[in-house]
Image (cartoon, rainbow, N blue to C red; front, side, top):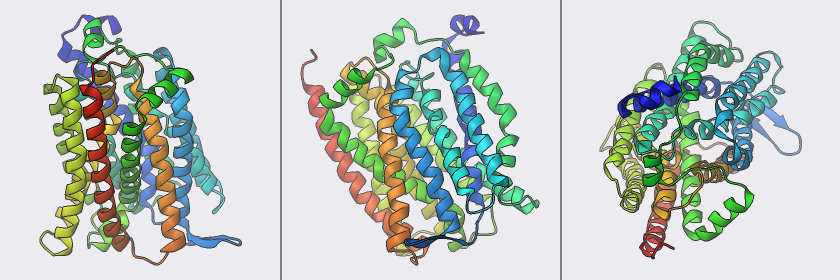
Length: 424
């Protein structure tokens, strides 16, 4: 099959790789996000600390596992050779599924540990999938397609979870049942990924050669461009925390806005957002010059931050309705978030003519991003435990818009200056 893809017209390989990556990550989300459809009422008492909402503890536990996974992925994903990626994806999701099965039988609150174990391997999957796509002439198109998967899949996974709950499946059993519904498609899509040929010589000429990176290579890259990378990572910390709060509390936010009895709103709204962002990211394929593309991406980051802030202001002044607002903040959020997971670091390495892997920079950003997410949940639970979710989200929207726009401008100016320097 690999030989056939190599000799086929480029459009065939693009469609094959795009579908395989989209389907793999889409199916993975069923093992990660379906549980968020449950309300998980009750509190968990922490002696000498506080009493936290049970669902909050579950969310924090899974994100903490995901965060640890991202830090581990800085080394593992950047060093893993291509021939081992497909098997690693199946192992990661298999371990996550086993943790969900235990979640269904271990009594609460001890089953919180199972969600930590669920998040621990899943954080590796994105880097493993994107490793099949980076460093190609069509990486922008492929990255846009797979990025749309986690926007759409999040809503679909929670939608499936809600429907299982309505059908009578218990809250603790629902996550593993939802995951298993997607397991056959997952195996097929990973097989498709394993057949994708390596980038061609023409790909390497346009996007630089991609290779695994050891510790000295990773340290050298980060030191060389630290100011710009720090600005990008700070931006991503705010984006990730904002995105995860909106994602995990989507049922509560929609209920507060008057849509609690309409589970389909979770998937339909995210589908609109996903398709819109995918179209914008795919258009980067038309920008062949890597330095110019990097500037365009920074403008997308800035535009996303402004959309979040301005749409929230419009909603508070009753200029737009709740559904339009949630769609707008989703669009703005993912205009900033999606480039980090596909085109931003791929184009950054290409513009700087650095040999390496975008997976390293993706996982540095992800690791600190999810660390910020854990900090956000803990801050809300300890300092503003009684603040309604909707009010917290509106305040968070303004803060994210301000901080993200500042970091976007700082990073854009830094890398514009570095790219104007003569290449050595």
